[in-house]
Each structure stands twice: as structure tokens, then as C-alpha cells.
Length: 327
Image (cartoon, rainbow, N blue to C red):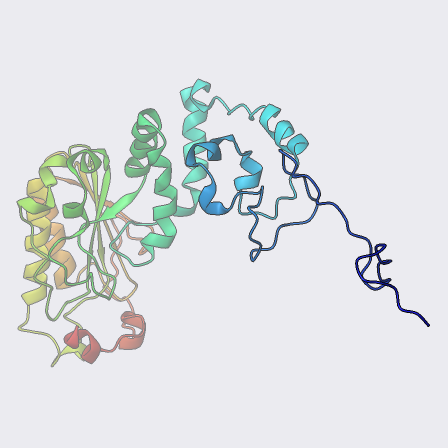
């Protein structure tokens, strides 16, 4: 077969080579894509990164998108919450003062008939109730007056613990206004009978001059140190009797507005005991009216010289004389 001469008619293109396509002209605007541009792409993405956000544009983002929640809340729920009107508060101060006092009485019902002392349980028993005083000036004035005027406050702490030997009794920790609202005080004798705490001293730091509304002083005797079974544990005869009498005389001298002294005692204490006779004589010398508490059931004409003598465990409520000496 004769060969075709070179330079003749153009040869037919090969099937493997395929047709030659003209280049596509570049569009002046980018063609939007529904797929995210890979990070390794050389072409710039139309979605800016976090670093490319303008700080001023954050204020334009809806609040529900800035929340740390799962974002399930809708604009409809947000609009409903925004249009919901707040509940109207109850006009407590519009009530008559008599009804407000009844409310205070109900609020402090858990602390009624209980003597206020430096007791660790005060934080759980009283502190939450006193949060009411932070409401406003009017409520503070009315509620504080009700609280301090309807409770009896103990002069010296008697609860065993870290406050028993404190140099700052409860009265010294109150301010002048709070002390001026108190109407009743209590002096409880018996704890520390062998060695009284050093903080049991009547001095100006107690603030007795501010207790202008105190009309009654309760004196409760828990123990008669002259009992025979206490011999060997007590100090010299008559020590605690003289100590108790001096405390009462000092309190009555610092509380000129007190007009009556109420005496009470535990079952083992007799009215004819040395400690009771010393206290009764101190009250009579101060020209105060004597009255009797409900615990012992004394009257002006009874004679309990034959009162039974109870064992030490009953007298001291589970405390032995040796433990009291250590205290």
C-alpha cells in the first residue's frame, strides 16, 4: 500500500485525544456554591472566619443566639415573655398597724417563749427570721421593736461551749438602740458555781444604761452550792452565794427602771437556802417588788424547808460535780 505524502491533508484526530474545548471565560462575580469551601482550597471563601468578624456587629446578633443554652427557644417565646406583665406586689405597708403586728407575731412564732442567749442554735433558730429587718426602714423599725420587746434576753451565757467564758456577753454585742427596746432580762445562776467565768462581771461594756425599758429582771437559780454532797468540790462556804448576790446588786444598780424581780429555781433549791436568802435580801434592799416564777411554784407565804434533796445527776441535768469543776 502506498504511503500518504507528508504535508498533505490534515490527519484525523485520534479518538483517545478527544475534542479540544475552548477555555471558559471568568465571570466578574463569584458563582455561589452550596458547599463549604475546604480549608485547603486556594480560593477565598465567601463565609468569613471568627477572626474576620467585626466586633461592632456582635450587638446586631439576636440575644437567643448569644445564649449558652441549646438554642431551642424561638422568637415567639421571647416575645411572649417580654409582653408578660409582672405580678403586682402585695401592699403590706397599706395594712393597719394592728394587722402588721399580727404578721410580725406569726413571723417570729418559732422564737416565742424562748430566752435569747449566746447559743449556737441561734443561727438556725433566729437568724433567718431576722432577715425580715432588711426589707425597709419602716419594717425594720416595727419588726425590731416587736422582736426585742417580746423576748427575754439572758445577761450572761450559760450554754456550755465557746461562748460560756466569753468576755463579751450578749448585751455587749447588741447596739444601743437594740438594748433600748428590751423589756425583760434574765440572770441564771448555777453554771460555773465552783469557778465562775471571768466575763461574768457587771461593767459599763454591758450597756445597762441603754436598757431604759427593762421593767422586769428574772433570777433563776439552778443549784444550791450548800448541799452536802457538793462538799469537796466547792470553794469556801459562802463563796458562790456572795458572788451571786454581788451580781444581782450590780444589775439592779445599773437598771434603775426595773420595778420587780421575779425569782424562780429548780426543784432542789429551797427558798430557805443560803443562796436564795442572799438574793432575796439584795432585792429587798434595792426596794424592788418580789414575784415568783412558774417553775418552782413559790408564793409569798409558803415554806419549802422540807423540799426533797435530789441526786447530783438530776440536779445538774446529767453533769457530775467533777465536770462542773473542770468547766
